Image 1 (cartoon, one colour):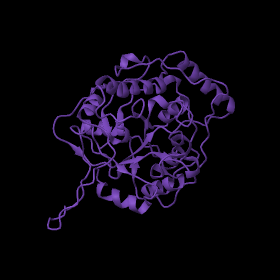
Image 2: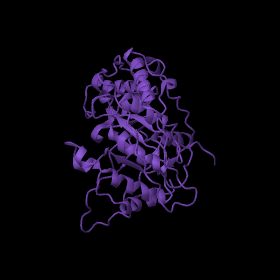
Image 3: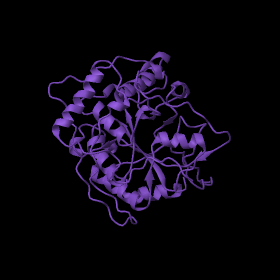
Image 4: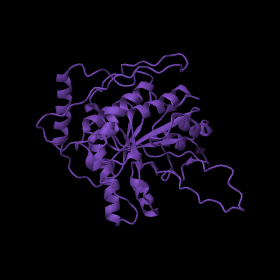
Length: 355
């Protein structure tokens, strides 16, 4: 079965930023378009650097050499881009941004079991500041985890592609999985991206929209480079606050304005959503579903079931993620921590290899 895949095998981005002058030109052009209050159209997306490592064409017997990832420098003394506030998920509200095609659901029941990994920060502990250490995965650990998955024949798709597959009843190839990286820290570009590119992997980055272009977080130029490389930018609300029990107007603002801000910065409306801290209720789920562009949303992870009484029969197996059109706005993920060894991660994913 032939299907659209978002895997890049070695050279999945464009050509290198050949000179510092070109980098400054691209950054300046992107800033000028956004500072003038206009959305960035896809044609204005800067060409990101080329992967310098090439994957071998034979079986996965060794890992390619990791090449340092060039930094997109900010312009000294230049103010951050200024966006007009748009509190709407209507595609017409951000001119020039590519809208998400309307859903055309294939009739009948259909379910997938594609594992979705959840990361937050890929950064050395010395650079993690006051981030919770359980959310900080050092780049060497991240690389070892992906090395093991790649060597075992695993490959990635984005959450948007997973939504497409569920919608169209398309079964991905065996050993397909999704990588998600929450909160939009700039180490997702500096450290995670070259490790992903080394393996031809892609990821879905969940960005806190109100922090775009803020120090320590992904810039508009970096977000455009991620999109150009095949990665996906998802909505993680405007301010990263729990959505349960919010007033209706605030609930809509966090979801809709967050989506619009991402559309302004990247030129594309987001298709996926992550609930901050996994906090949600029925109203929050309904509000996500009401945003025209969003087609899939993820929660933190499965809640741990209560321990059975001594006389009770233990369950035969832990719950298994099922991605269906009915539960597409509450899809669970697998949390990956700095203590998750490559062997442990492989063992957790192996039962889900069929997708």
